Image (cartoon, rainbow, N blue to C red; front, side):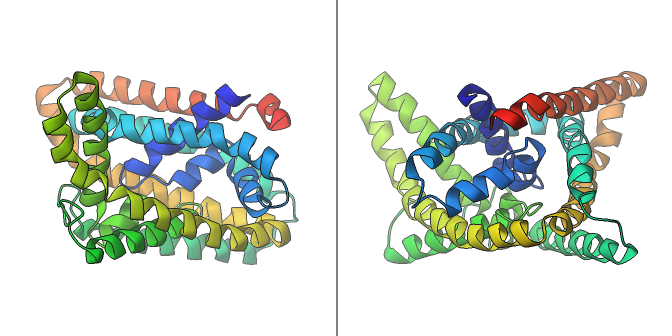
Length: 306
């Protein structure tokens, strides 16, 4: 059970890094979102159970973030169409779970208004983030308290909104121009570990300034998650099916974002160097693998064990 949740956390961690992907949607995809909100909301009254549940997910997410900062982003740059179609498959595979949640209340056409509003809202937020560069680094290292407050705000802003299903934390960081800063710091942290293992303390010292930026960012992130968890916990308790009508709209928006980010812009250049039929077959294969992964991770047996 813990190993499966660690793997699920790993996928959530990857989603936190890739622009356009939502860590909370992937928590929905792998059947953990409601349980995570519940564990956070009841942490004080049930610390042991909450820690036992959240710790494997947190470890997996940290590993996913550290791995994807360099490796996954490299794959997305080198093989954008294949990788983003895999992400599309992950989202598509979660629709049966969302529809199951929506069917808990009798359908009314007015409920679709929630889906439309959430679809348009997330699409608008995504468009806002298009101006933020993935490579622009606003703050290179921890040099002043202004830097600390900037990162504290970045953590609280991005992670509180990211806790709402469908909102991409990476896109929110782009909105405030801190995406490059945060993931440069994560990359420097990975480098720092390698430098220490090699005994290169000079290089490790040079990387440490950037790594320090993660401290206020993490503190802000924790505060943001705790604050929004209360709200989402209330909504899921009182209006669960309506929440998932909203999630459905968000997921459709996420699919559009994934195609606009990683498929359409690269199609012409990729087909110039690769047989289009082969590319289509590879893309379909990656998409199917993504769907299968979601179905496996959200199997009924895992739902019962969680």
